[in-house]
Image (cartoon, rainbow, N blue to C red; front, top):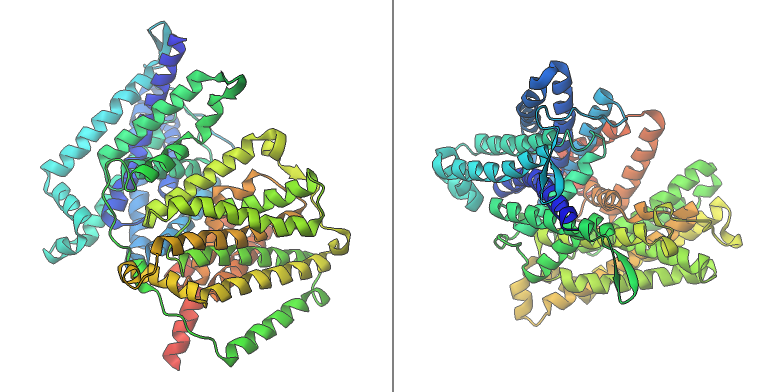
Length: 621
Protein backbone atom coordinates (compact mmCIF):
# COMPACT_ATOMS: atom_id res chain seq x y z
CA UNK A 1 0.00 0.00 0.00
CA UNK A 2 2.78 2.42 0.98
CA UNK A 3 4.76 1.51 -2.14
CA UNK A 4 1.72 2.15 -4.36
CA UNK A 5 1.15 5.49 -2.69
CA UNK A 6 4.78 6.45 -3.23
CA UNK A 7 4.66 5.50 -6.92
CA UNK A 8 1.49 7.50 -7.44
CA UNK A 9 2.98 10.51 -5.64
CA UNK A 10 6.04 10.45 -7.88
CA UNK A 11 3.80 10.22 -10.93
CA UNK A 12 1.68 13.10 -9.62
CA UNK A 13 4.70 15.31 -8.94
CA UNK A 14 6.10 14.60 -12.43
CA UNK A 15 2.78 15.64 -13.98
CA UNK A 16 2.72 18.71 -11.73
CA UNK A 17 6.11 19.78 -13.02
CA UNK A 18 4.97 19.72 -16.65
CA UNK A 19 1.73 21.42 -15.69
CA UNK A 20 3.70 24.20 -14.02
CA UNK A 21 5.75 24.82 -17.18
CA UNK A 22 2.56 25.06 -19.22
CA UNK A 23 0.71 27.26 -16.72
CA UNK A 24 3.67 29.57 -16.06
CA UNK A 25 3.70 30.55 -19.74
CA UNK A 26 -0.02 31.30 -19.66
CA UNK A 27 0.37 33.27 -16.44
CA UNK A 28 3.23 35.35 -17.89
CA UNK A 29 1.26 36.22 -21.02
CA UNK A 30 -1.83 37.20 -19.06
CA UNK A 31 0.17 39.15 -16.47
CA UNK A 32 1.69 41.47 -19.07
CA UNK A 33 -0.70 41.54 -22.04
CA UNK A 34 -3.97 40.84 -20.13
CA UNK A 35 -4.85 38.40 -22.91
CA UNK A 36 -6.63 35.21 -21.87
CA UNK A 37 -4.78 33.16 -24.47
CA UNK A 38 -7.02 30.26 -25.43
CA UNK A 39 -4.40 29.15 -27.98
CA UNK A 40 -1.89 28.30 -25.25
CA UNK A 41 -3.08 24.68 -25.27
CA UNK A 42 -2.46 24.57 -29.03
CA UNK A 43 1.15 25.65 -28.43
CA UNK A 44 1.47 22.73 -26.02
CA UNK A 45 0.04 20.35 -28.63
CA UNK A 46 2.38 21.65 -31.33
CA UNK A 47 5.30 21.24 -28.93
CA UNK A 48 4.48 17.55 -28.55
CA UNK A 49 4.16 16.98 -32.30
CA UNK A 50 7.28 19.03 -33.09
CA UNK A 51 9.31 17.23 -30.44
CA UNK A 52 8.45 13.82 -31.89
CA UNK A 53 9.15 15.02 -35.44
CA UNK A 54 12.58 16.42 -34.55
CA UNK A 55 13.53 13.37 -32.48
CA UNK A 56 12.63 11.02 -35.34
CA UNK A 57 14.34 13.20 -37.97
CA UNK A 58 17.66 13.38 -36.08
CA UNK A 59 17.42 9.90 -34.59
CA UNK A 60 19.86 8.29 -32.17
CA UNK A 61 20.27 9.07 -28.47
CA UNK A 62 20.91 12.75 -29.15
CA UNK A 63 17.76 13.25 -31.18
CA UNK A 64 15.44 13.19 -28.19
CA UNK A 65 17.44 15.68 -26.15
CA UNK A 66 17.90 18.05 -29.09
CA UNK A 67 14.16 17.83 -29.79
CA UNK A 68 13.24 19.42 -26.44
CA UNK A 69 14.82 22.89 -26.99
CA UNK A 70 14.09 22.68 -30.74
CA UNK A 71 10.36 22.20 -30.06
CA UNK A 72 10.37 25.08 -27.56
CA UNK A 73 12.09 27.35 -30.11
CA UNK A 74 9.67 26.35 -32.89
CA UNK A 75 6.65 27.07 -30.70
CA UNK A 76 8.17 30.40 -29.63
CA UNK A 77 8.35 31.40 -33.30
CA UNK A 78 4.74 30.27 -33.76
CA UNK A 79 3.73 32.39 -30.74
CA UNK A 80 5.47 35.45 -32.20
CA UNK A 81 3.65 34.96 -35.50
CA UNK A 82 0.29 34.74 -33.71
CA UNK A 83 1.03 37.74 -31.50
CA UNK A 84 2.25 40.04 -34.25
CA UNK A 85 -0.31 39.04 -36.89
CA UNK A 86 -3.45 38.79 -34.75
CA UNK A 87 -3.27 39.89 -31.13
CA UNK A 88 -1.25 43.07 -31.67
CA UNK A 89 -4.14 44.42 -33.73
CA UNK A 90 -6.73 43.91 -30.99
CA UNK A 91 -4.92 44.72 -27.74
CA UNK A 92 -7.31 47.65 -27.26
CA UNK A 93 -10.39 45.46 -27.78
CA UNK A 94 -12.38 44.02 -24.86
CA UNK A 95 -10.77 41.00 -23.23
CA UNK A 96 -13.52 38.64 -24.32
CA UNK A 97 -13.01 39.68 -27.94
CA UNK A 98 -9.36 38.74 -27.60
CA UNK A 99 -10.55 35.41 -26.26
CA UNK A 100 -12.59 34.93 -29.45
CA UNK A 101 -9.52 35.68 -31.57
CA UNK A 102 -7.37 33.16 -29.72
CA UNK A 103 -10.15 30.58 -30.04
CA UNK A 104 -10.06 31.11 -33.81
CA UNK A 105 -6.30 30.50 -33.67
CA UNK A 106 -7.04 27.20 -31.88
CA UNK A 107 -9.21 26.09 -34.80
CA UNK A 108 -6.61 27.11 -37.38
CA UNK A 109 -3.71 25.40 -35.60
CA UNK A 110 -5.70 22.20 -35.04
CA UNK A 111 -6.38 21.74 -38.75
CA UNK A 112 -2.82 22.72 -39.70
CA UNK A 113 -1.65 19.99 -37.32
CA UNK A 114 -4.15 17.61 -38.95
CA UNK A 115 -2.67 18.41 -42.37
CA UNK A 116 0.90 17.91 -41.18
CA UNK A 117 0.63 14.91 -38.87
CA UNK A 118 -2.73 13.25 -39.63
CA UNK A 119 -5.58 12.23 -37.35
CA UNK A 120 -3.94 9.19 -35.74
CA UNK A 121 -2.19 9.46 -32.39
CA UNK A 122 1.61 9.41 -32.69
CA UNK A 123 3.82 7.67 -30.15
CA UNK A 124 7.13 9.32 -29.36
CA UNK A 125 10.46 7.80 -28.38
CA UNK A 126 11.44 7.12 -24.79
CA UNK A 127 14.12 9.27 -23.18
CA UNK A 128 17.57 7.76 -23.95
CA UNK A 129 19.41 6.92 -20.75
CA UNK A 130 16.27 7.27 -18.64
CA UNK A 131 14.24 4.26 -19.77
CA UNK A 132 14.54 2.30 -16.56
CA UNK A 133 12.97 2.50 -13.12
CA UNK A 134 14.36 3.17 -9.65
CA UNK A 135 13.24 1.31 -6.53
CA UNK A 136 12.08 3.70 -3.82
CA UNK A 137 10.35 2.44 -0.67
CA UNK A 138 9.58 -0.92 -2.23
CA UNK A 139 8.02 0.57 -5.36
CA UNK A 140 9.53 1.23 -8.79
CA UNK A 141 9.29 4.73 -10.26
CA UNK A 142 10.39 5.72 -13.81
CA UNK A 143 13.74 7.50 -14.00
CA UNK A 144 12.28 10.03 -16.43
CA UNK A 145 9.66 11.07 -13.85
CA UNK A 146 12.46 11.95 -11.42
CA UNK A 147 13.97 14.25 -14.07
CA UNK A 148 10.61 16.01 -14.53
CA UNK A 149 10.22 16.45 -10.78
CA UNK A 150 13.60 18.17 -10.59
CA UNK A 151 12.96 20.30 -13.68
CA UNK A 152 9.94 22.19 -12.28
CA UNK A 153 11.77 23.93 -9.38
CA UNK A 154 14.78 24.61 -11.64
CA UNK A 155 12.59 26.43 -14.19
CA UNK A 156 10.88 28.37 -11.39
CA UNK A 157 14.24 29.57 -10.02
CA UNK A 158 15.51 30.48 -13.51
CA UNK A 159 12.37 32.48 -14.30
CA UNK A 160 12.53 34.33 -10.99
CA UNK A 161 16.19 35.16 -11.56
CA UNK A 162 15.36 36.34 -15.08
CA UNK A 163 12.77 38.75 -13.74
CA UNK A 164 14.91 39.96 -10.83
CA UNK A 165 18.40 40.17 -12.34
CA UNK A 166 17.86 41.41 -15.90
CA UNK A 167 16.59 44.77 -17.17
CA UNK A 168 14.13 43.00 -19.48
CA UNK A 169 12.76 41.08 -16.53
CA UNK A 170 12.39 44.24 -14.46
CA UNK A 171 10.46 45.89 -17.30
CA UNK A 172 8.21 42.85 -17.56
CA UNK A 173 7.48 43.02 -13.82
CA UNK A 174 6.77 46.72 -14.15
CA UNK A 175 4.42 46.09 -17.08
CA UNK A 176 2.63 43.48 -14.99
CA UNK A 177 1.92 46.13 -12.36
CA UNK A 178 1.26 49.18 -14.59
CA UNK A 179 1.48 49.01 -18.38
CA UNK A 180 0.66 52.70 -18.85
CA UNK A 181 3.52 53.75 -16.59
CA UNK A 182 5.99 51.57 -18.52
CA UNK A 183 4.81 53.12 -21.79
CA UNK A 184 5.16 56.62 -20.35
CA UNK A 185 8.80 55.85 -19.53
CA UNK A 186 9.52 55.32 -23.21
CA UNK A 187 9.74 51.53 -23.16
CA UNK A 188 8.82 49.89 -26.46
CA UNK A 189 5.77 47.98 -25.27
CA UNK A 190 5.31 46.22 -28.59
CA UNK A 191 8.68 44.46 -28.31
CA UNK A 192 8.09 43.77 -24.62
CA UNK A 193 4.74 42.12 -25.32
CA UNK A 194 6.21 40.10 -28.20
CA UNK A 195 9.11 38.93 -26.03
CA UNK A 196 6.80 37.83 -23.23
CA UNK A 197 4.56 36.03 -25.69
CA UNK A 198 7.57 34.23 -27.16
CA UNK A 199 8.78 33.16 -23.71
CA UNK A 200 5.33 31.98 -22.64
CA UNK A 201 4.87 30.06 -25.89
CA UNK A 202 8.31 28.47 -25.55
CA UNK A 203 7.41 27.23 -22.06
CA UNK A 204 4.22 25.67 -23.46
CA UNK A 205 6.21 24.04 -26.29
CA UNK A 206 8.81 22.71 -23.85
CA UNK A 207 6.05 21.30 -21.62
CA UNK A 208 4.53 19.52 -24.61
CA UNK A 209 7.87 18.12 -25.77
CA UNK A 210 8.69 16.86 -22.27
CA UNK A 211 5.54 14.74 -22.35
CA UNK A 212 6.71 12.74 -25.39
CA UNK A 213 7.72 9.62 -23.39
CA UNK A 214 4.56 9.79 -21.25
CA UNK A 215 1.68 10.28 -23.71
CA UNK A 216 1.10 10.18 -27.50
CA UNK A 217 0.65 13.32 -29.55
CA UNK A 218 -3.00 13.79 -30.50
CA UNK A 219 -5.27 16.52 -31.79
CA UNK A 220 -7.22 16.56 -28.53
CA UNK A 221 -4.29 17.75 -26.43
CA UNK A 222 -5.02 21.44 -27.01
CA UNK A 223 -8.34 21.73 -25.15
CA UNK A 224 -7.24 19.37 -22.37
CA UNK A 225 -4.02 21.32 -21.86
CA UNK A 226 -5.60 24.78 -21.89
CA UNK A 227 -8.25 23.70 -19.40
CA UNK A 228 -5.64 22.32 -17.01
CA UNK A 229 -3.48 25.43 -17.45
CA UNK A 230 -6.40 27.76 -16.71
CA UNK A 231 -7.20 25.83 -13.55
CA UNK A 232 -3.61 26.01 -12.30
CA UNK A 233 -3.29 29.71 -13.06
CA UNK A 234 -6.58 30.58 -11.38
CA UNK A 235 -5.89 28.49 -8.26
CA UNK A 236 -2.40 29.97 -7.94
CA UNK A 237 -3.44 33.52 -8.81
CA UNK A 238 -3.21 35.23 -12.20
CA UNK A 239 0.31 36.48 -12.93
CA UNK A 240 1.94 34.64 -9.99
CA UNK A 241 4.66 32.13 -10.92
CA UNK A 242 4.98 30.82 -7.39
CA UNK A 243 1.21 30.53 -7.22
CA UNK A 244 1.21 28.46 -10.42
CA UNK A 245 3.94 26.21 -8.99
CA UNK A 246 2.04 25.76 -5.73
CA UNK A 247 -1.24 25.04 -7.51
CA UNK A 248 0.37 22.50 -9.86
CA UNK A 249 1.87 20.68 -6.88
CA UNK A 250 -1.45 20.71 -5.05
CA UNK A 251 -3.32 19.27 -8.03
CA UNK A 252 -0.66 16.65 -8.72
CA UNK A 253 -0.61 15.43 -5.11
CA UNK A 254 -4.40 15.33 -4.72
CA UNK A 255 -4.80 13.41 -7.98
CA UNK A 256 -2.13 10.94 -6.89
CA UNK A 257 -3.91 10.41 -3.57
CA UNK A 258 -7.21 9.78 -5.36
CA UNK A 259 -5.61 7.13 -7.60
CA UNK A 260 -3.80 5.51 -4.66
CA UNK A 261 -6.98 5.40 -2.56
CA UNK A 262 -8.89 3.47 -5.25
CA UNK A 263 -12.28 2.18 -4.10
CA UNK A 264 -13.08 2.83 -0.44
CA UNK A 265 -16.23 1.93 1.51
CA UNK A 266 -17.84 4.92 3.23
CA UNK A 267 -20.79 4.01 5.53
CA UNK A 268 -21.03 0.69 3.71
CA UNK A 269 -21.17 2.30 0.26
CA UNK A 270 -18.23 1.70 -2.12
CA UNK A 271 -16.78 4.96 -3.39
CA UNK A 272 -14.31 5.00 -6.28
CA UNK A 273 -11.90 7.87 -5.61
CA UNK A 274 -9.93 7.21 -8.80
CA UNK A 275 -12.91 8.46 -10.83
CA UNK A 276 -12.46 11.85 -9.17
CA UNK A 277 -9.22 12.45 -11.07
CA UNK A 278 -11.10 13.88 -14.06
CA UNK A 279 -12.77 16.53 -11.93
CA UNK A 280 -10.74 17.00 -8.77
CA UNK A 281 -8.84 20.05 -10.09
CA UNK A 282 -12.11 21.81 -10.82
CA UNK A 283 -13.39 21.02 -7.33
CA UNK A 284 -10.14 22.45 -5.92
CA UNK A 285 -10.58 25.56 -8.06
CA UNK A 286 -14.15 26.05 -6.88
CA UNK A 287 -13.14 25.67 -3.23
CA UNK A 288 -10.16 28.01 -3.65
CA UNK A 289 -12.20 30.73 -5.34
CA UNK A 290 -14.95 30.44 -2.74
CA UNK A 291 -12.42 30.96 0.08
CA UNK A 292 -9.87 33.21 -1.66
CA UNK A 293 -11.35 34.95 -4.74
CA UNK A 294 -7.97 35.93 -6.26
CA UNK A 295 -6.22 32.58 -5.95
CA UNK A 296 -3.68 31.37 -3.42
CA UNK A 297 -0.98 33.96 -4.21
CA UNK A 298 -2.83 36.33 -6.55
CA UNK A 299 -4.00 39.90 -6.17
CA UNK A 300 -7.37 41.53 -6.90
CA UNK A 301 -7.86 42.29 -10.57
CA UNK A 302 -8.31 45.76 -11.91
CA UNK A 303 -11.65 46.62 -13.46
CA UNK A 304 -11.86 45.32 -17.01
CA UNK A 305 -11.96 47.98 -19.70
CA UNK A 306 -14.67 45.87 -21.33
CA UNK A 307 -17.08 46.92 -18.64
CA UNK A 308 -16.64 50.59 -19.54
CA UNK A 309 -17.44 50.12 -23.18
CA UNK A 310 -21.10 49.23 -22.79
CA UNK A 311 -23.86 51.31 -24.37
CA UNK A 312 -27.03 52.60 -22.82
CA UNK A 313 -30.36 50.94 -23.57
CA UNK A 314 -32.17 52.40 -26.56
CA UNK A 315 -35.94 52.06 -26.60
CA UNK A 316 -36.88 50.51 -29.98
CA UNK A 317 -39.10 52.46 -32.32
CA UNK A 318 -41.76 51.49 -34.82
CA UNK A 319 -39.14 50.41 -37.40
CA UNK A 320 -37.73 47.84 -34.95
CA UNK A 321 -41.14 46.29 -34.26
CA UNK A 322 -42.02 46.24 -37.94
CA UNK A 323 -38.74 44.52 -38.81
CA UNK A 324 -39.13 42.03 -35.97
CA UNK A 325 -42.66 41.14 -37.05
CA UNK A 326 -41.55 40.68 -40.66
CA UNK A 327 -38.69 38.42 -39.60
CA UNK A 328 -41.01 36.28 -37.49
CA UNK A 329 -43.45 35.94 -40.37
CA UNK A 330 -40.63 34.98 -42.71
CA UNK A 331 -39.34 32.44 -40.20
CA UNK A 332 -42.82 30.98 -39.77
CA UNK A 333 -43.16 30.59 -43.55
CA UNK A 334 -39.83 28.75 -43.88
CA UNK A 335 -41.32 25.20 -43.83
CA UNK A 336 -43.37 26.10 -46.89
CA UNK A 337 -40.33 26.93 -49.04
CA UNK A 338 -37.31 24.93 -47.80
CA UNK A 339 -36.53 21.19 -47.73
CA UNK A 340 -36.25 19.02 -44.61
CA UNK A 341 -32.47 19.37 -44.35
CA UNK A 342 -32.65 23.15 -44.23
CA UNK A 343 -35.52 22.86 -41.76
CA UNK A 344 -33.36 20.82 -39.37
CA UNK A 345 -30.59 23.40 -39.74
CA UNK A 346 -33.06 26.22 -39.09
CA UNK A 347 -34.26 24.40 -35.95
CA UNK A 348 -30.66 24.22 -34.74
CA UNK A 349 -30.25 27.94 -35.41
CA UNK A 350 -33.32 28.75 -33.29
CA UNK A 351 -32.14 26.55 -30.42
CA UNK A 352 -28.64 28.00 -30.39
CA UNK A 353 -30.00 31.53 -30.77
CA UNK A 354 -31.96 30.95 -27.57
CA UNK A 355 -28.85 29.54 -25.89
CA UNK A 356 -26.70 32.47 -27.05
CA UNK A 357 -29.26 35.04 -25.92
CA UNK A 358 -29.30 33.53 -22.43
CA UNK A 359 -25.50 33.81 -22.28
CA UNK A 360 -25.67 37.36 -23.65
CA UNK A 361 -27.99 38.29 -20.78
CA UNK A 362 -25.19 37.48 -18.32
CA UNK A 363 -22.34 38.93 -20.42
CA UNK A 364 -24.03 42.07 -21.77
CA UNK A 365 -26.48 43.59 -19.26
CA UNK A 366 -24.95 41.60 -16.39
CA UNK A 367 -21.29 42.16 -17.32
CA UNK A 368 -20.49 38.63 -16.08
CA UNK A 369 -18.71 36.31 -18.52
CA UNK A 370 -19.42 32.59 -18.22
CA UNK A 371 -17.08 29.90 -19.54
CA UNK A 372 -19.46 27.15 -18.43
CA UNK A 373 -22.87 28.21 -19.69
CA UNK A 374 -23.39 24.81 -21.32
CA UNK A 375 -24.05 23.44 -17.81
CA UNK A 376 -27.57 24.96 -17.83
CA UNK A 377 -28.09 23.79 -21.42
CA UNK A 378 -27.12 20.28 -20.32
CA UNK A 379 -29.22 20.35 -17.13
CA UNK A 380 -32.28 21.29 -19.20
CA UNK A 381 -31.55 18.60 -21.78
CA UNK A 382 -30.96 15.84 -19.21
CA UNK A 383 -33.97 16.94 -17.12
CA UNK A 384 -36.31 16.71 -20.10
CA UNK A 385 -34.85 13.42 -21.30
CA UNK A 386 -34.98 11.77 -17.86
CA UNK A 387 -38.55 12.93 -17.23
CA UNK A 388 -39.59 11.29 -20.50
CA UNK A 389 -37.47 8.13 -20.22
CA UNK A 390 -37.60 7.43 -16.47
CA UNK A 391 -40.75 9.17 -15.21
CA UNK A 392 -42.84 8.62 -18.33
CA UNK A 393 -43.85 12.27 -18.64
CA UNK A 394 -45.20 13.60 -21.96
CA UNK A 395 -43.06 16.00 -23.99
CA UNK A 396 -44.72 19.29 -23.03
CA UNK A 397 -44.54 18.89 -19.21
CA UNK A 398 -40.96 17.67 -19.57
CA UNK A 399 -39.97 20.74 -21.58
CA UNK A 400 -41.82 22.98 -19.13
CA UNK A 401 -39.97 21.48 -16.16
CA UNK A 402 -36.52 21.73 -17.79
CA UNK A 403 -36.08 25.53 -17.44
CA UNK A 404 -37.30 25.35 -13.83
CA UNK A 405 -34.58 22.85 -12.93
CA UNK A 406 -31.94 24.73 -14.94
CA UNK A 407 -33.03 27.94 -13.23
CA UNK A 408 -32.66 26.24 -9.84
CA UNK A 409 -29.12 25.30 -10.86
CA UNK A 410 -28.57 28.96 -11.70
CA UNK A 411 -29.66 29.95 -8.18
CA UNK A 412 -27.07 27.60 -6.69
CA UNK A 413 -24.21 28.55 -9.03
CA UNK A 414 -24.96 32.27 -8.94
CA UNK A 415 -24.73 32.41 -5.15
CA UNK A 416 -21.03 31.49 -5.39
CA UNK A 417 -20.23 33.36 -8.60
CA UNK A 418 -21.41 36.86 -7.71
CA UNK A 419 -18.65 37.11 -5.10
CA UNK A 420 -16.09 37.08 -7.93
CA UNK A 421 -15.47 39.14 -11.04
CA UNK A 422 -13.62 39.02 -14.36
CA UNK A 423 -11.66 35.94 -15.29
CA UNK A 424 -12.03 34.43 -11.82
CA UNK A 425 -15.83 34.47 -12.14
CA UNK A 426 -15.61 32.97 -15.62
CA UNK A 427 -13.31 30.21 -14.39
CA UNK A 428 -15.61 29.34 -11.48
CA UNK A 429 -18.45 28.86 -13.96
CA UNK A 430 -16.11 26.60 -15.95
CA UNK A 431 -15.38 24.57 -12.81
CA UNK A 432 -19.07 24.10 -12.08
CA UNK A 433 -19.74 23.06 -15.67
CA UNK A 434 -16.94 20.51 -15.59
CA UNK A 435 -18.25 19.06 -12.32
CA UNK A 436 -21.71 18.77 -13.90
CA UNK A 437 -20.17 17.15 -16.99
CA UNK A 438 -18.28 14.61 -14.88
CA UNK A 439 -21.49 13.67 -13.05
CA UNK A 440 -23.26 13.07 -16.37
CA UNK A 441 -20.23 11.18 -17.69
CA UNK A 442 -19.81 8.85 -14.72
CA UNK A 443 -23.35 8.33 -13.38
CA UNK A 444 -24.05 5.38 -15.68
CA UNK A 445 -27.20 4.15 -13.93
CA UNK A 446 -29.06 7.45 -14.39
CA UNK A 447 -27.51 9.39 -17.28
CA UNK A 448 -26.21 6.45 -19.29
CA UNK A 449 -22.63 7.60 -18.78
CA UNK A 450 -20.60 8.19 -21.92
CA UNK A 451 -23.29 6.45 -24.02
CA UNK A 452 -25.89 9.03 -22.99
CA UNK A 453 -29.64 8.61 -23.47
CA UNK A 454 -31.39 7.68 -26.71
CA UNK A 455 -34.96 7.49 -27.98
CA UNK A 456 -36.15 10.92 -26.76
CA UNK A 457 -38.37 11.90 -29.65
CA UNK A 458 -41.11 14.56 -29.88
CA UNK A 459 -44.78 13.75 -29.22
CA UNK A 460 -46.85 12.56 -32.15
CA UNK A 461 -48.40 16.00 -32.74
CA UNK A 462 -44.90 17.48 -33.22
CA UNK A 463 -43.22 14.52 -34.87
CA UNK A 464 -42.75 16.02 -38.35
CA UNK A 465 -39.82 18.35 -39.07
CA UNK A 466 -42.08 21.28 -39.90
CA UNK A 467 -44.27 20.94 -36.81
CA UNK A 468 -41.28 20.67 -34.48
CA UNK A 469 -39.71 23.66 -36.22
CA UNK A 470 -42.83 25.76 -35.56
CA UNK A 471 -42.89 24.59 -31.95
CA UNK A 472 -39.21 25.51 -31.56
CA UNK A 473 -39.82 28.89 -33.21
CA UNK A 474 -42.62 29.66 -30.73
CA UNK A 475 -40.48 28.64 -27.74
CA UNK A 476 -37.41 30.54 -28.99
CA UNK A 477 -39.41 33.68 -29.70
CA UNK A 478 -41.04 33.40 -26.28
CA UNK A 479 -37.70 32.87 -24.49
CA UNK A 480 -35.99 35.74 -26.30
CA UNK A 481 -39.05 37.90 -25.63
CA UNK A 482 -38.80 37.16 -21.91
CA UNK A 483 -35.13 38.17 -21.92
CA UNK A 484 -36.02 41.39 -23.79
CA UNK A 485 -38.72 42.23 -21.23
CA UNK A 486 -36.37 41.57 -18.31
CA UNK A 487 -33.66 43.76 -19.86
CA UNK A 488 -36.11 46.66 -20.29
CA UNK A 489 -37.73 46.19 -16.86
CA UNK A 490 -36.49 47.98 -13.71
CA UNK A 491 -34.58 44.81 -12.85
CA UNK A 492 -32.66 45.07 -16.14
CA UNK A 493 -31.73 48.71 -15.47
CA UNK A 494 -30.59 47.78 -11.95
CA UNK A 495 -28.47 45.01 -13.46
CA UNK A 496 -26.77 47.51 -15.78
CA UNK A 497 -26.19 49.90 -12.91
CA UNK A 498 -24.54 47.07 -10.96
CA UNK A 499 -22.35 46.37 -14.00
CA UNK A 500 -21.31 49.92 -14.87
CA UNK A 501 -21.01 51.58 -11.45
CA UNK A 502 -21.42 49.13 -8.55
CA UNK A 503 -20.42 51.66 -5.89
CA UNK A 504 -22.98 54.22 -7.11
CA UNK A 505 -25.59 51.50 -7.44
CA UNK A 506 -25.03 50.50 -3.81
CA UNK A 507 -25.25 54.17 -2.81
CA UNK A 508 -28.74 54.55 -4.29
CA UNK A 509 -29.97 51.42 -2.54
CA UNK A 510 -29.45 48.67 -5.13
CA UNK A 511 -28.31 45.39 -3.63
CA UNK A 512 -25.67 44.67 -6.29
CA UNK A 513 -24.95 41.09 -5.28
CA UNK A 514 -28.63 40.17 -5.11
CA UNK A 515 -29.40 41.70 -8.51
CA UNK A 516 -26.47 39.89 -10.12
CA UNK A 517 -27.43 36.67 -8.34
CA UNK A 518 -30.97 36.82 -9.74
CA UNK A 519 -29.58 37.12 -13.26
CA UNK A 520 -28.19 33.58 -13.05
CA UNK A 521 -31.54 31.73 -12.70
CA UNK A 522 -33.04 33.86 -15.49
CA UNK A 523 -30.19 33.02 -17.87
CA UNK A 524 -30.07 29.41 -16.65
CA UNK A 525 -33.79 28.87 -17.23
CA UNK A 526 -33.65 30.15 -20.82
CA UNK A 527 -30.54 28.04 -21.54
CA UNK A 528 -32.32 25.04 -19.99
CA UNK A 529 -35.27 25.58 -22.34
CA UNK A 530 -32.84 25.56 -25.27
CA UNK A 531 -31.33 22.31 -23.98
CA UNK A 532 -34.75 20.65 -23.70
CA UNK A 533 -35.63 21.67 -27.27
CA UNK A 534 -32.25 20.35 -28.42
CA UNK A 535 -32.69 16.84 -27.01
CA UNK A 536 -36.11 16.37 -28.65
CA UNK A 537 -34.77 17.65 -31.97
CA UNK A 538 -31.91 15.13 -31.96
CA UNK A 539 -33.65 12.24 -30.20
CA UNK A 540 -30.64 11.62 -27.97
CA UNK A 541 -27.99 13.34 -25.89
CA UNK A 542 -24.60 12.63 -24.37
CA UNK A 543 -22.31 14.35 -21.85
CA UNK A 544 -20.85 16.33 -24.76
CA UNK A 545 -24.08 18.35 -24.57
CA UNK A 546 -22.59 20.21 -21.60
CA UNK A 547 -18.89 19.93 -22.48
CA UNK A 548 -16.45 22.84 -22.67
CA UNK A 549 -16.72 22.97 -26.45
CA UNK A 550 -20.45 23.76 -26.17
CA UNK A 551 -19.74 26.65 -23.79
CA UNK A 552 -17.07 27.93 -26.18
CA UNK A 553 -19.53 27.76 -29.07
CA UNK A 554 -21.91 29.96 -27.08
CA UNK A 555 -19.16 32.50 -26.38
CA UNK A 556 -18.22 32.59 -30.06
CA UNK A 557 -21.85 33.14 -31.09
CA UNK A 558 -22.31 36.05 -28.69
CA UNK A 559 -19.01 37.74 -29.51
CA UNK A 560 -19.29 37.15 -33.23
CA UNK A 561 -22.74 38.75 -33.36
CA UNK A 562 -21.90 41.50 -30.87
CA UNK A 563 -22.46 41.77 -27.16
CA UNK A 564 -23.93 45.28 -27.28
CA UNK A 565 -27.45 44.36 -28.44
CA UNK A 566 -29.89 41.47 -28.09
CA UNK A 567 -29.87 41.00 -31.86
CA UNK A 568 -26.13 40.27 -31.74
CA UNK A 569 -26.30 36.74 -30.27
CA UNK A 570 -29.20 35.84 -32.58
CA UNK A 571 -27.21 36.86 -35.65
CA UNK A 572 -24.05 35.30 -34.21
CA UNK A 573 -25.83 31.97 -33.59
CA UNK A 574 -27.27 31.96 -37.12
CA UNK A 575 -23.96 32.79 -38.80
CA UNK A 576 -21.88 30.40 -36.67
CA UNK A 577 -24.30 27.45 -37.01
CA UNK A 578 -24.70 27.98 -40.75
CA UNK A 579 -20.96 28.37 -41.32
CA UNK A 580 -20.17 25.28 -39.25
CA UNK A 581 -22.67 23.19 -41.20
CA UNK A 582 -21.79 24.59 -44.62
CA UNK A 583 -18.04 24.30 -44.22
CA UNK A 584 -18.28 20.83 -42.64
CA UNK A 585 -20.11 19.54 -45.72
CA UNK A 586 -17.46 20.74 -48.15
CA UNK A 587 -14.07 20.20 -46.56
CA UNK A 588 -12.33 18.02 -44.03
CA UNK A 589 -10.47 21.08 -42.79
CA UNK A 590 -13.58 22.93 -41.67
CA UNK A 591 -11.88 24.27 -38.53
CA UNK A 592 -9.26 26.03 -40.62
CA UNK A 593 -11.88 27.77 -42.74
CA UNK A 594 -14.12 28.53 -39.76
CA UNK A 595 -11.20 29.84 -37.69
CA UNK A 596 -10.08 32.03 -40.58
CA UNK A 597 -13.60 33.40 -40.94
CA UNK A 598 -13.82 34.14 -37.21
CA UNK A 599 -10.45 35.92 -37.36
CA UNK A 600 -11.72 37.96 -40.29
CA UNK A 601 -14.79 38.94 -38.28
CA UNK A 602 -12.63 39.85 -35.27
CA UNK A 603 -10.28 42.04 -37.31
CA UNK A 604 -12.88 43.56 -39.65
CA UNK A 605 -15.79 43.87 -37.18
CA UNK A 606 -14.26 44.64 -33.77
CA UNK A 607 -17.75 45.31 -32.33
CA UNK A 608 -19.22 42.08 -33.66
CA UNK A 609 -21.34 41.84 -36.81
CA UNK A 610 -24.42 43.65 -35.47
CA UNK A 611 -22.39 46.18 -33.48
CA UNK A 612 -20.21 47.08 -36.46
CA UNK A 613 -23.16 47.36 -38.85
CA UNK A 614 -24.98 49.56 -36.34
CA UNK A 615 -21.88 51.73 -35.91
CA UNK A 616 -21.55 52.23 -39.68
CA UNK A 617 -25.28 53.00 -39.92
CA UNK A 618 -25.03 55.66 -37.20
CA UNK A 619 -21.98 57.21 -38.88
CA UNK A 620 -23.83 57.54 -42.18
CA UNK A 621 -26.98 58.94 -40.54
